[in-house]
Length: 122
Image 1 (tube, helix red, strand yellow):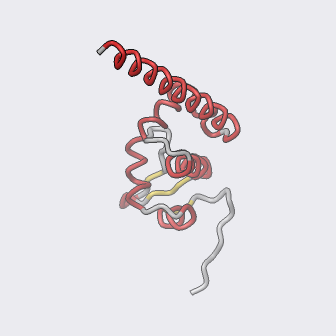
Image 2 (cartoon, rainbow, N blue to C red; image 1 turned 30 degrees about the vertical axis):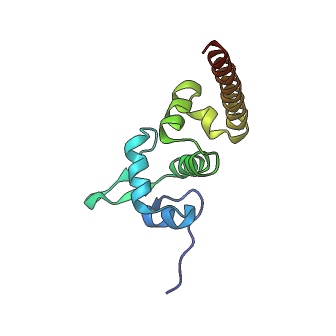
């Protein structure tokens, strides 16, 4: 059976999105529960249809979670703090993530300093 290719602007089923993004169905449904910004249309029988903006968000979520190593909680905080438009803009998000990583490195350095001070005090 020949597969019909849909345009990028067409709505896609969960199976089509799962195939394109290489993410299992259950992960897509789980992310729907965790991210209120993700809301595919649901037709009779509970069949989901993802809009192009849903697919763009899913693609970005996949990058942030699988490639950049953020947790779901971390992505939700990023969306809350910076807004969905900033998160969807990959270049902007990369700058934000660099700031977060710098903060982590600085915090780790401070914790090591505190540990050394405590060692000397004992």
